[in-house]
Image 1 (tube, helix red, strand yellow):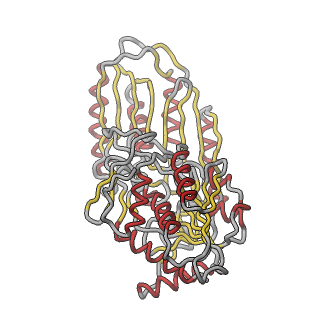
Image 2: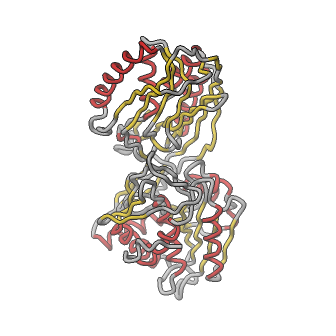
Image 3: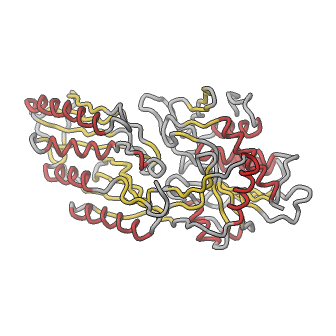
Length: 486
């Protein structure tokens, strides 16, 4: 199964399992194969295993000698990954293995996401379960499904399957940081009905494209000022609409609502004599955007191209106007910053996906906040905008925040061990992103949790990469913590 690209890296057992799972398709909603792989792994080692209807997997291992009476520790991560690829990359995420490569201290996939978020948690867990000489307390490994698109695996989890009340989540992305709180979130959906009409055969077709943006995680990187291709497209379409008569044929942009969209396209029809005016306006917009995003997205560029294909039907002028209006008014970006934790985004939303089908234009967003009422306010703002243009609006996958626990014993232990290893304290952080700890807190109530992980970069993008040395450091840290839990 393994491609052996990582065979010489240390810790050997961690990278062996990481490489194995990169050969298994495991995009959100397509976790059956990886879930069955985990079950087979446990059965081969005579470990107790539970696979529930949501395909979550729980694997239990007794404590080693001297740890029989130690408290049970839950090691937790998620098995799904975000499937993103470059436009020119040929890769079928439903069946193709990832193509790994090593560059210095970094591991990449070629042209696609790497799945280190959260494949490294699986690798750590399997290496520990497979070990025979690592001291540790009783362990319950919990690997959930669908974390990236709604946390339905964590939602479906039956807490009676687990006895541990210490949980170590391994879904963080920066070494030396201990995550102690996270935002809650919700997905918002708007759908605007298309009134089609017959296209004027005298009009020409053209594509307007937004390219060159970096994108990124809609929680972790929403504060970096990176351009949202869908919102940029909306601004340009509105500007063009003020001086040129055109009609839309379709809109598309982004792939996941929890990823800042990097590309967006609008297909339009217009008079031939107006094409040059639009081209001039696009040239102006390139200058505007190069200035606005000179730090965060220096490679942003807008393309306008006449296409030969003729279309039989187009959006009515009224639908075109509504789509452009809604695209501009749906909220996006940072809405508030924390007054308690410096630099922490308190609430935000990301218009991650726009798409067109035969009947509707869809607008899909991911909203986050560490304060429930602020999350509700953003949702209400989006609802008002949608309903103002006659669009249907609804929400999905609402999940709770994880509030800071001032009396966490596992946090204190992690701090103590880190100080012993490195002679300094780790950074205690709260993040503007959802981790499953919020749902676990809701389910277990009295559970004591911490989240940590190695250095991961550009997650949810084809540039995603993971530090080899940081994986080793974090592995040693984990083992040192477990050794202390007696």
